[in-house]
Image (cartoon, rainbow, N blue to C red):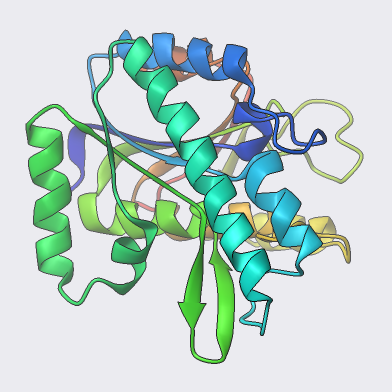
Length: 260
């Protein structure tokens, strides 16, 4: 059963950093999100992307979701950059009056006991802490690979069954094609052929290290198949999160949770 007072939010790397400017944190946008989150009467769990910190080194050293024999120096640089970004985000959240608590991405993917992990997260939330994790580089058989923050969103949703999930991004929602023209799609059903066609149309040979919008939608669909509504909203307008939680109409996209 879904937790009626838990919101799971992904802070996209394109929101918390200036994605086209290597290693540049977007302090203003992150602070604004923190202030809005502090006003919510909900429990929270957060995931953030890598933006111009993680993706910069991922591109430079050919790291992706596929395991590869990447250089040790490249892996070390990407890990250090993500820790630096994570620290900046934690500080911003603290300044907003929130109490973030780092949860290791490795633990979320490779914990030997899912029961222990679920209890750990639940106890943090019960104590009014905010679990925060992030996309990262993991060691794997034969090399290293990136675990996307989008995948971590699914892992947490599966464990905690939040009432609502949000992906905060640098666009107003999911658009029907790559041109981003017109208005975003208002609502999609996770089990619809329309969503299949949309994904097929959005696929591109040029993707970022974690799969771009296509992979994001695929992971959101998996979350919606758990029966949870998933919103795609503009992270530069975080007030829309509040409005959505109050049942108001927003400019954004909803992948409707499958009701069984």
